[in-house]
Image (cartoon, rainbow, N blue to C red; front, top):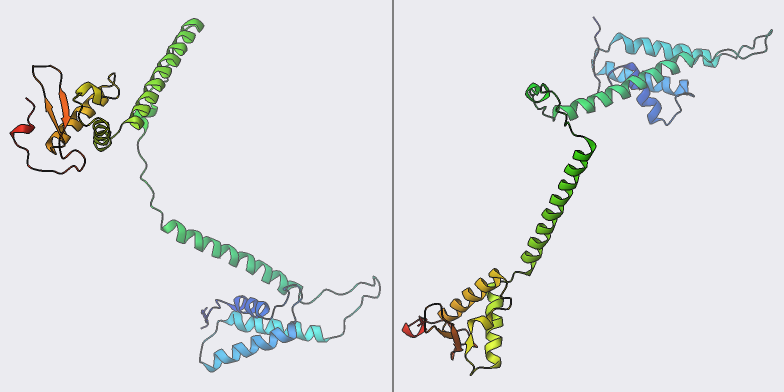
Length: 261
């Protein structure tokens, strides 16, 4: 009993024949039957020596090639009445090979698609009836009401955009404590003997952030004993003067003299 087998890279007689044609760099429309037949039969014989039971289709195609080869060796018969040329004995084989290549290419494409889709996980279908079953709502507005609502929307959007721009500008303009401490240091170094007030350390009195930043920077410099501060009365003016450690920023344990009086 014969059965189909896969021999090396060949899965049938046409697969082997296509390989021999392409390996010999022949045109499928102009097969050199004599050469291909010899190679095909040699391959069949090698398989038989290896005790490989070939499918009957291999032998049928071998017989077909031999038949085509014999017809190619006969002189061409010219029709006397019409003066035409007889049909090429390779025509039927060529058509079968073309069809075989089409289906083989299609099977390779499907195999690649199967491999690609096997790596894709589908999301389970969800029940969207909760969202789709609600009827559409329509606004009952006349043209004047619609125009007013649209203008209100534009005004609100303009305000939101302005607030966002101001916020982004403030964020970009904000500086760190280290930068403000350097500013205070350079300011005091210009007049080392002068007694400064806290207000003179604030670059933008209208900005709460700038005021808070200056105050925190002042406290940090007091902690480092770079400046001294005093306040005579509650909520009174804070006065600041430099210490010997202003320029080097040496940190030491604070003592009672550092406290704001």
